[in-house]
Length: 314
Image (cartoon, rainbow, N blue to C red; front, side, top):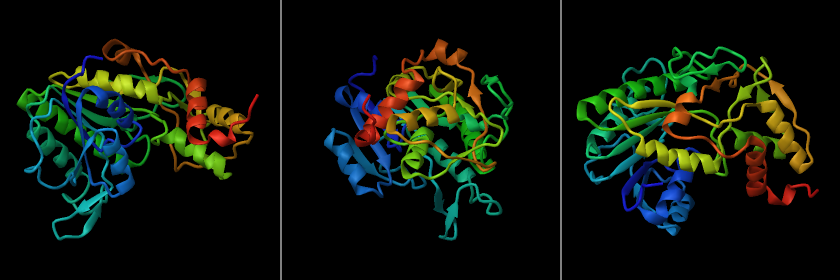
């Protein structure tokens, strides 16, 4: 890692994609997090490790935000914003154009413009922009756009990618677009969500076209490859899949986590959840590096971090 003595801004900064990189960078850099901070406890936890917290809504003007950051790591995913008539608008809602998901893309463009002096800007997109081919067929970055999960979520990311590409070229701002797939850890993510359901004894939704193949990514790799993405910025942006190296099914890793705590998962088949999507990792390995955490090790670490008292001793 060569990001040291730098001024780094995390936008969002509290989920499984960015929080590990934030914790890795904080000891040797001046790290700030811009967020709404509706959870005061989360703010106190960040300040306790030396992070500067900047309460700010992504949709507000950035006049009061410093513009001298060396790097920006943007993982914010706002659920709603205030429309032109003062009402709260859900992102992706249909019929309020332009007061819908394009406001998110606009905010990203304004943030990049404000931080135009940065040496690197990371935007967290999603593998959900792809048209899933089904099964465990590897999906490269050149795969056509489609809908992997809800249309609104996919479209917000496609719109943002277009804005990031334009602003990067217009301002000569090095950028990296990471298409995130199944990043999970103590800070959240799809595997953490399924673990919580398992512990609660609730059904775990899985797609009818099972098994559901994924490439889970865990906290140590999220940290290292997150920092690598900051350093890998290009003009035009580097667009790269960002996921784990191992291919495993949701059903298999849930069963394994169940074995660790002595519980058997109950699966509920529904089309209202993700189907299989296995990102191709060729470009990621070339541009950012390999993951080091095997899926079983990642599952065990997650269970031990989140529910240490439930782990069945061998």
